[in-house]
Amino acid sequence: MSLCEIQNRASQDALALAASLTTATIAATLTKIDTQRNAANAATAEDPAGTVKKASEHPFMATQPAYSPKAPARADVDAFPGVTVIEFGTDWCGYCQGAQASIAKAFEPHAGIRHLKIEDGPGRPLGRSFKVKLWPTLIFMRDGAEVARLVRPTSATEISEAFASV
Image (cartoon, helix red, strand yellow):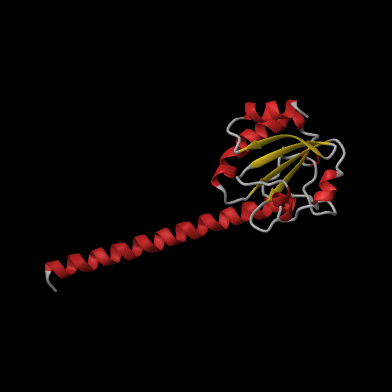
């Protein structure tokens, strides 16, 4: 075997080893993420209508970790008494993920307010009824009537100002 063949074989073996380590690392990371997501979803309480309960009913966090694929009917939303914030988005949306820290911070002093995180997309009737076009969109409601709307909020201050209107 020539020196060139030995070097070529060593390079191929090194690449195969690197690929297997990368695959194993990715698989382990994905397993860890799935475990965390499953634990968070198991801790998520839902009401009979399939919507997320008030943040105050979740002692471990101010907002839900994931958007619910189950949405109440628009008539039910319009009948909610008191203050409700509906957050439309998706778990895979980068803007939605980026806004979560600001949303959580803004919700801290409003722990008792009903906060629905609803998964949105084509054919989702609740999002269409509110004419949601971009995510995340936060709809602030009082007694079933929209009083403020934020599209792609970038700061907790911006969200807190919208809370002042309800």
